[in-house]
Length: 368
Image (spheres, one colour):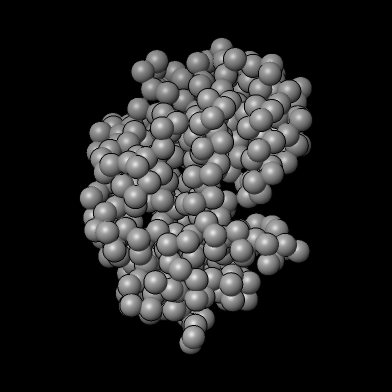
């Protein structure tokens, strides 16, 4: 069955995709958030011309064709656009078979442990500890990630001394029964990252994310080799050659692909298989409550080298106002610190008709 049309529904932050087959079957997907309206244009200009008319089951072949035909544009926007079509085709496949996507890739519905992921740096250590303790007690989270350093900070903290203060503050507030993770967002040089890493180790932190500029693999590997703590990264990477290098050289201890940044579920499964062969766990990046968290939930319920946790954003509408009313019903309930993949077909979610009615609409179709 061939792809008849590809539609986009977008604003600046979110772009949902709908793919329709010749027999009328449909599936919903999404591109990566932020400047999503630009990615919508890329779908129609650089992905749809090659995907339309192709078999809906040949997802890998479609993605490779787009990559090859648009070889002069190998970067993030093209991969994000590819992911919008890929994820819609997986939803269509699940609906055809009456199965959740996780079942199509060898998994089963059910629960998965989540960690509460904080995005905030403009918060004092005491205030951050207080709000995470409340979430621990309300939602049952037994793992949290907080921010250290400054985003691409060149060894400069968000404000002087914040990192050295927040690490022991969080451990004291949470006690020894809660796993703690940190994200440096490319802040440090190797020497400073190793220095901070030793403070993390002394306080029982288990996960040190993106310590150095993410594109500097040699710098990150210096940190990985120097510390006992798990060094993690990969959320930004969208090129397979980068993933092969990262995994073959063991640049990090845990890889963190983002389904939407990487180009969809099919390409993420390729990376997960590379990591499995190398004995490396996969703890994907999914830092907001759009469909990317659903994609990741299904992935983690299926791959044999799933990491310990699902990243789960704790930021509400004050931080991400664009998350408001994306879906008819909320698919992200946390019970006892766990998220649930249901047995509903496809991704198991319905995009809000009210949101769609206010979005920018475009369609590419195949008449042959």
